[in-house]
Amino acid sequence: MPDTAYPYKRIAAELLFCLSVLAIFLPIKVYPMFFLVSCLFSYLEKPRLSFPAWALFLFIFTGYASLIFLVHLPEDRLDLGNFIKLPLNFLFLYISVNWLRQRNNEALLRWLDITLHIVFALTLVQLLYYHQAAHFTLISGSPSSAKASALYRPARYFWGLPDKNMFGARIALLGFAYILLPLAKKSRLEWWRIILVFVLAWLSLSRTPLVALFIGILYLIWLVSTKKMRIVIGVASLVAIPVLAYKVLRIDHITASNDGMGVRLVYWKAFFQHVGNISPLGNGFLSGKAFLAQYADFYHGEPHVHNTFLTCYLDFGIIGFLSYVLFLYFFFKYCQQHQRPLSFWILAFLPLLAIMMILYTGYDNDLVLYLALIFLLGSIRPVYFKQLKLSPI
Image 1 (cartoon, rainbow, N blue to C red):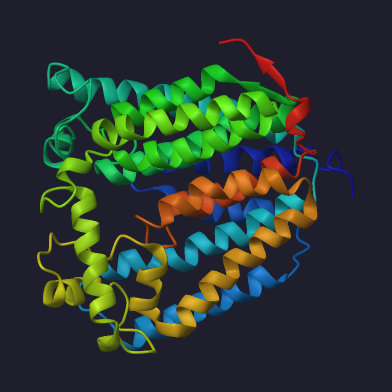
Image 2 (cartoon, rainbow, N blue to C red):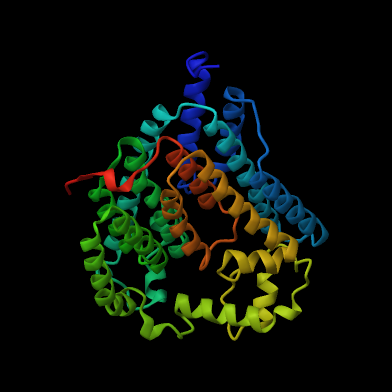
């Protein structure tokens, strides 16, 4: 049935999908309501559901995680709230991808572009508001993770997330989708978007988005470049590595107990040194709290080990780990089947995997929304990088 048959269903579904993007940035946690209503209207417009391999493994992961949660039922209501987002977010991903694959998404792409303009305009205002309170003393960067985190004053929080690393990761993921959008919409690479997203990532004072964006943008530029330009890029990257290592990654402080990367190294060390103490069936939902408190050299209260895959194994054991990895693998293959070339999907997944290796539990709303967005962007039309129009700054 053509999309024009019931235009009110189409418009309502598109509007709610875009509102779901906005909702995850609101300080009041209303996004679950928007996700559910979006699922309802998406299903009403396109009720035909398929069950590909990625959905099967997603169902296995969700079902097993739910079973583990019930077996190790926590007393903390906060843990219950955190668990609810697992089936909810994955339901949103499943329904949204089924909806997107059956329709013409050209109009939705225009609405999404406007939505992301709003998102990043407000993100810029929020970050400048934080920096203004600090008299812009950290505008050129922070000497430590502790000082960077202190920028995020709760009294000034109105948009995004009050956590430096999580807000930075959100900027990186949705920012990269924002960069890819004109590639899908009009076969154009717009440099001003790259500059804007990098500026926002820098202002967030989180190294997470900068590393992920550097990987993604470097590969994007590599894809659109000539052979001579690739040589220049390679040489420039080698020259830039020492600067990035000391100025951006703060590698000279990487072993400090108050350094974000130093904390990750300690947690990963604890995981691998004591992996034998982890049950093959999983230690339970958010079991990182007890595990790290017992085995890490120091512990700052996080419920996970700052790595999606290690966290999946710690919480849900071999079944959870394998089902999650297979879900991602088959989702990648599913995306590839819907559109070529392969290079676009590699490009889209690189920043995601980079962030997952140092953050996320695996079922965060940022992650599932990003997967839905890249499926949308990659299924509009083929993206041939050598034929892209390069816009001026």
